[in-house]
Structure formats: C-alpha cells, structure tokens
Image 1 (cartoon, rainbow over the protein chains, first blue to last red):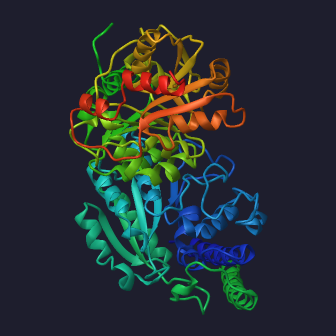
Image 2: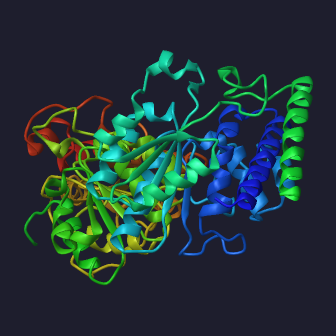
Image 3: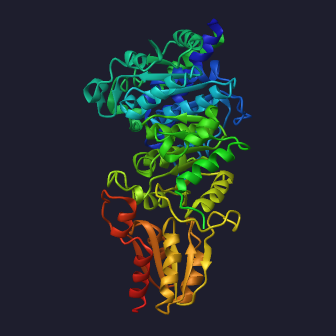
Length: 284
Length: 311
C-alpha cells in the first residue's frame, strides 16, 4: 500500500471514530464499542476498495455492502457521510424522531445503505442473496459484509454459510469483527464460538485471520480472497471500543452512550488521534 | 366443472409459465415437490435456489435477491415459511418493503395426516399484523393463476396462502378480473352474506344452494385478498343483508373473521358469526375427514347461517 494511501485511510478511520462517538453521545443511546472496532474495515471498504459513488447510490454496477451487525450503524453512517452520500450534519439527528439515520440501517431512507439490517444473522443471508444474483448473472460487482463475533452465534449465519458454499459464491467477502465481546460479556463466557476460522473452513469457506486495525493486512487479505474460488471470510482480530481508553475491551460499552464527563474524555482522545493522523497525512 | 386440483399445483404451473417472459427467482427449502416449485426449477434451473431445510436463510436470501431489483418467490409449507421464518419476513422483507413473494403451501388443517405440527392455522393472523404486507388466499386454480400474475406485477411483499388438498374448480379461466384487494361477489342474496376465503369459497357456494331449501337467500363474496381488505364491499353487503357469516380454514382468532368484524366495528350494521378452527391445534387424519371434523364444510356454513338468523 502506498504511504499516502495508508495515511489517508488512517485519517479517515480516526475521523469515523470521532463522528461515531459524537453521534452516539448526541443520540444518548447506541453502540460505540463495536462501531469503534470496525472503523478500519468500513474505512478500507469505502475509501480504498468498493466501487460506490455518492451521487449515484443506486448504480446497478456498484459493489454492495451489508452491515450484518447493524447495531454498529454509527461507523457506517460516518463513512457514508464522509464519502458524501449525505451531509455530516445528519449524524447529529441519529436516532431522533423524524431522522433519516435510524438506530439500525434502513435501506429505504438512507442513500448508500444496500440492505436494512439490525436483526442479527439476517444481513449475512441477504448479502449471500445479492451475491447469488451476481454470480448467476455473471455481474461485475462484489458483495462485502461485516458480521459481529457475537452474531455468529445465530444459527442462520451457518445456514447462510452452507448456502454460499453450495452455490459457490466466490463474489462475497465477509468480515467477522472478532472483538471478543458481546453485550453480556466475553464471547467465550456467553457462547464460545471458537474456532471461528476452522468453523468457516468446515463450511467450505476460504478463511483468513488478520489484525482488523491494520490496513495493509486488510488489503492483503482482500487480495487473497479475490483470488480464491470459494466464498471468503476474513476474521479480524480487533479491540472493542478501540481509541477510547476506558471503552477498550470493556463489554459495558457495547450498547450505551457516554455521559457528558465521559464523552469529554472520549472526544479529547479521539480528536487528538485524528489531529495526529491529519498532521501525518499533511506532512506525508 | 373441471376436476379437483390443489392451489399449489396451479401455483407451480403458473410460476413456470410466468418465468418465460419475466425475470424473477424462485427459492424453496427442500419441499419443491410438495410446493410445486419443482416445475419452475426444472424449466429454469438458473433462476432457482434450493436452500435446503433452512427457511430463515431462504427468506433473507430472497430479500437480498430482491434488493438487487429482481423479485423473488420463496416457498415452503406455511408452518415453516411463515411460522419459523416470521422474523425474517418481518425484518428482511416487510420492513424494507422488498418484492419478495412468500407463497406458502400446506396451510390449514387440510395438510391432513401429518397432523398438528404441520397444520398452520395462524398464518393469516400473523401476516395481517405485519405493516405493509399483502395477504392473499385463493380459492381455486384459475384464481390462483390470475392472482399470481397480479402478485408478480405488485412491487412489494406478499404472502400467498396455498393448500395441499384438491379443491373444486369453479372459476373459468379468464372469466373474471382479479385485482389485489378487490373482493368478488359470486352470488347476490338479500338475507345474509357469506364472506369466505380459500377453500371455503367453494363450500360457501354449496351452502348457498342448500340454504335455498330453508328459504334463505345468501350472497357469497370471495375475499381472496385478506389484506388490504375490500372493506367497502363488505360494508355494502353487511348493510344490505344485516347478517354476515365468515368462513375460513384458519383459527377464528386473527383471521378473515376478525378482519371483517374490524371493518364493520364502527358501523355496527350487521350481526357477524365466524366459522373457522376454534382455537385448537389440528390432528392427524385425511384432509376430507378433518374438514368434516372441524365443521369446515358447506353444511357447517349453512348451520352457522341458520343459527345467526334464528332459523
């Protein structure tokens, strides 16, 4: 990856973290932990990978993205806003009456959202349905989807995994955000999903395990995935709450908003990180 | 009159015919022989997905297909398509208003010998309660075929209820215009109106003949679309006759009967009696035996009418 690209992506990810936490704080509810852990993933997809353009969100030939872990909408919304699908100001109305930005992604309301999600497991199946059409019609676009590590406890995920293998959907790339925590605690304590990679391999998928905060690792894994003739899953080891000291690896920040004093700390940490990333980009 | 045929057979045949000139996908969950999607699958293997015994995935996959702009038909038994995969229908299909057509066979007690685990008499109630869902229940083959064309043209989610049991054919092909949400007056009458859906429509017509012997002149309406309900038509005939009997192969809770009562609730222009399955689970027996057992017959309707009219 070119240095300039890497610095650009780092700046965007830092900005997405800032915007996500600000939006959750403004809404007084939402899911900061998992939004922070997928910041690099959505940044990579929207700013270095997917063929999507803001002024033509329904372009038939666009790549599709499904946020199967729909509760991490703040990260997706922040990426869409920065990409120009809608005004960044919309983020301030998140979860409020009459807002375009619903608590979970709504494809009918939000430009750039390809599937309504929120009920875990369903987005993954829908992504497979999109890929099935692309495959059968030999269409040029690809389907990308992000699942949570808690989400894969849903039986439907494995129904979809079987489906993708049966119909040889080599045009789908799924990411599992392995941040290690779900709302009730550590995934191993609630319902141990390990080994995630071997489970997917047993279901016929090409599975890789990477550091989900490392853009170069993401890029390499996606390139490998694109060479595979199997459906691909990239299991991303991440830090839940990444970038906010007191949220990191703390499942209590799965689904609640920071209070004012807490927000001020988060805002300072995330702003400093973003300013540093911006400076590096400008000097880069 | 043509030979008896199950609505699922008409569905399978028509789906394959519509596939010739229309782009859509068909999905099934290992019951393609029973739901009759196998006819389409054989003709258009490139537009068919057998999802295996995984109805939840099937419905969400259908939603993903529809999200690319191509309609998708998803079939299984009503119990599993609507029952097991309810939440997928609600969240993946109905909430985004995607053109997924859930065409569920083996609804009601006429599943027969398989018994209660497979006899679903709650599907109309459940699907009615979902915002934006269109709920269709055809009476015979000609109406199934005509309604299927309308369902394909309609850009939104639809639940179509089909049966396993061979039923009498009384519509001639092309005889009438079928429009979603528009009931069909099959017979005029001044004393009572029988409002029926699905396989009970034929029974209602039979009951009408029997009631003539008792000096009762019954109108009959086929409500093939339970949602949106043709409220104007029902109100008109309720006001005209003063008595309404509803007939459905479904629980008396939440089905056609309750929909009709809701439609009439503000005007209170008629007395209404509901014939259906009286809030019990089904049981194993041949379908014909079960219709007698649950009183879902012409005689059952006639008795209900007479009781309502005190005759």
